[in-house]
Length: 178
Image 1 (tube, helix red, strand yellow):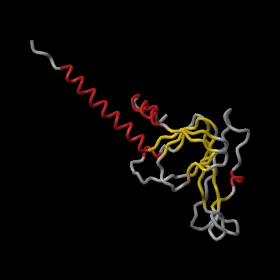
Image 2 (image 1 turned 180 degrees about the vertical axis):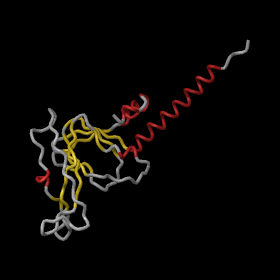
Image 3 (image 1 turned 135 degrees about the vertical axis):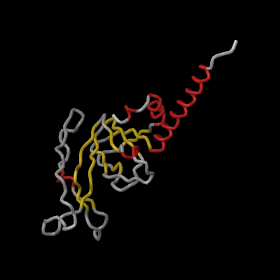
Image 4 (image 1 turned 60 degrees about the horizontal axis):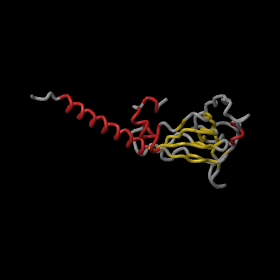
């Protein structure tokens, strides 16, 4: 929907610049807190979008300064999804080293073929914007992506074309003197 709001000339320019990438099931696409510089469209496959949250204290209670995690939304099933997506509790934890704290994974949503994610990478004005969630392929997935730079260039080129077209129209509108 976001790209449908753009002028056709901008969409054509983006089509010329789009790139593709394949990810195997379980492969990381992007991580929370990394620089957000790509918008992704899923051609085939499925992607889990999730956040890393602080684990509960040893007694099972949430840590005092950590907000209670919100309940994840129900899993969405469609014809393009695998029969069952892993439930939140099976997403497990991700640790860096034994001495570092483990991060529990909370599922935010799943996205499937025909859907997109990473919109904020294009819509934030800051070049240093960061990802608010991590994403990984749930099954073999083929993505198309555009970068923030590609998007900005397509918009700029469109504005240049509009200005040139207006100048030409204005020149054609000048009455001739006979």
